[in-house]
Length: 397
Ligand SMILES: Cc1cc2nc3c(=O)[nH]c(=O)nc-3n(C[C@H](O)[C@H](O)[C@H](O)COP(=O)(O)OP(=O)(O)OC[C@H]3O[C@@H](n4cnc5c(N)ncnc54)[C@H](O)[C@@H]3O)c2cc1C
Image (cartoon, rainbow, N blue to C red; front, side):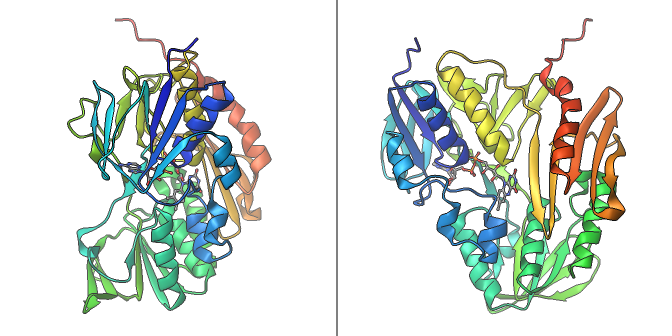
């Protein structure tokens, strides 16, 4: 029987809630506390840049659970009170409201915060998309705007551009890569994504960075790009990556390095675990530290952490997975392809708008991407399982 009688989870969103639910499902009967910086009950982030931004969903539809389901969890939710300090040896969390909280087991699930550019600070009409408040503020500005510039060619920038375009705005997507999401998709699929955006009327400016924002008073009116291009814009969205929300863990005694560094069981220190976007753990199948920012990982890692808290843990070895919805296309991305992996179309045909690409590295398949072919992509995922779930043997010297 596990000696753990109290669990404190810092971060009350996807990863934190999933950990709490998994603990209860596995029979944990001790006390459970979830501490959250936001006042909002736990909500899901993937709909923010899609259904909530577009207005297809009222914000409450993004909530992860009904009030009844949260009550049934028999947990104390301390919302609107961010953790501001942590002492790892004492397992002691201090909060902005002056609380001091301890528990037998602490789970760090504080996610990431959006990176911002110095040029955008204090400028009205300039937005990020990370939480519900950001999204509603952006939506409100988009409703009275005509032209929007999205800075950042990763998944969030591409999604925000697609949603704004579907809302009828003139959209320019800007980023340093030759095509949006090249790093995650490789040139073949990223080229296809560019075509999708262009066909839908998005203007794409690749190979450039933001040079400066133009303002009238404190309100954005346009921007200049690093190649000298001048653009007018009523709204600017920056989606230039995220940083792990570990400020409150500085000087705590934990190892922080692009996230909370954990072992293969997602343990950061005795009695302390990390889960979700904030966790950088030793993925034994890949033989290196990995931090994933995706929804499926938040749920799967939570299960692994809950098991380990209850004394039934094993190394966490997922096949990484995320999806993205842009215009009428759903892309599903399994695994992580190295930059020199060879892309081969194994199902469908890009000219028909439905296909699956497999990426082969020197040791075999590394990644699978499905474009509007969910079933076939999932079947192809099987080719990756061995690579990710078999622990790497240390190389004999
Ligand atoms: C707009 C958007 C769209 C996305 N779309 C997709 C998608 O299509 N597919 C996909 O796979 N993934 C998507 N993701 C990623 C996915 O939502 C995240 O990977 C997932 O939410 C991670 O869960 P988490 O619990 O680790 O972090 P989060 O969901 O970020 O939750 C962390 C929580 O901790 C709180 N917190 C932060 N600091 C403190 C503190 N000091 N004290 C207490 N609480 C704190 C935060 O307020 C937040 O509620 C998207 C993310 C965003 C932002």
